[in-house]
Image (cartoon, rainbow, N blue to C red; front, side, top):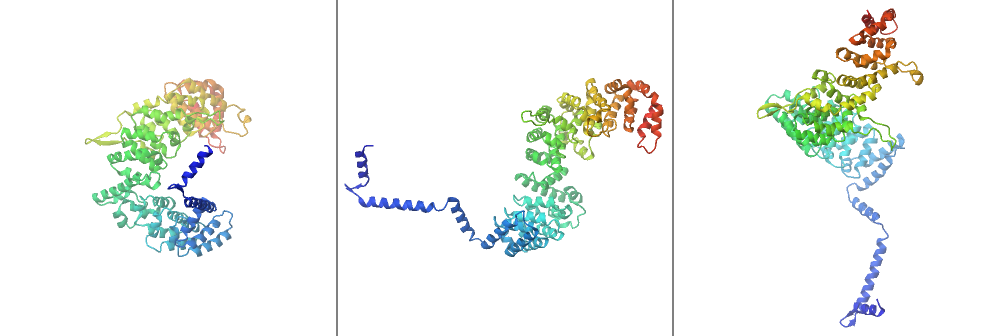
Length: 611
């Protein structure tokens, strides 16, 4: 801009009424200087320092402000891990002196609550008892603390560190009696209820658990013979009105808990499980629509697993699809979990849409990458891991076993109570099954997706399978469902290598041969006994043809003698085996009569077959 133009603009800025307004110019200069001074003052304190100053000023107006400040300094020293027991004791005496008579008020403050928590954690039994007594001196004070966002941590510490003091436990339980149904559906206090049932003995919490079933059962039942359940209370109810009232009371708690997504809490899962055990199938179906999307949380416990299994049994096809969707990515971990596998088995057992099960469940274990060569990770075969697992193998056994009786022998009574019943529901006044497809048709459709993978698994990992109890059961069922020379030869390879005399020379530790191993010899024996009852005997034929005279080496141990004796039951190899053992009858007889050298039942069984 030209100099003349700049001068003109400046003059216009201060011109007023045809004359220069010098007073206005002076005022602007003064304001500018004042602003500069303010900026200098502001720069004296940083923003964080200003915030601290404001916060400190605000806290100074709170109740017991000076006490809290001193207590917080002691708390900071108390939590140091390098403190000696004497240091802790000295600090605790100072803390107790400061907070005595003010514990409840201090516990309600968000920054001071930690001081009371530390006093409970690091204090002696007498100091904890003193703190608890002061808190309980006011009526319902523990209940109010349990509902407070910060103070409920004090309740959690009391439950954790007073669990060994019987008198303190009685005080805690007594102070909470009559309030459990309300606390159990409170957004904050629910954590206190969870801690109660997880950390305290069932006998202590039995009166509190009784409150979940309604006021009639909590007020009028004085003596509890054991841990109460919904079913036990319904059985003791004298009228139908009492039974309906108990069911409605529990249902109300469940509905409130589901609204607040309390599915991950163990006590809530237990209440859900007790309800589905006694509820009408139509009520379970109604509830299932709200539960199924949270299946992954419920599968963390046995009780939650029962709930998911019931929802799968009585839910609609849409509900079952939603369960599959919620478990996406968790198939393998669920099958390896000590409880969750049952819900997954039940889901597979009752779902008519086998294509959906294949895509969302089975395909996950079939398509899992076996190795990540770029990152140098060890190979991880999901199929092998499941087959060698006591829980995961039951998926394969359930699909491989051809009839219900042979299928259920692999499951214990508790598992059968979930998997065996045929789910029925009332529709238009008639009892109808919730699954329309025939069980055998469903089994064959699902097995069709796994057959090749299972056979390949047994061929490639025959050695691991025969030495594992779950793996040997899967191996036997695969062999009986898909018998082949290739599979038989893979198993015989393991037997042959086990008889190699250089086997122990190559390894640092001496190991038992397959025929002396507690699990291995039974695996081979069961395969031979299957051949004895079937039309084809691929394994027994291959074993005798390839080992020939080496079969005598099998009978050198008592367990191996049982295996050799089972070969006499297979018609196709009986003559060959008799010929091999004809010259060893006296040796076997001597071993069967020897005493003090260990078990001889196997030699006796073999001698009986030779004779």
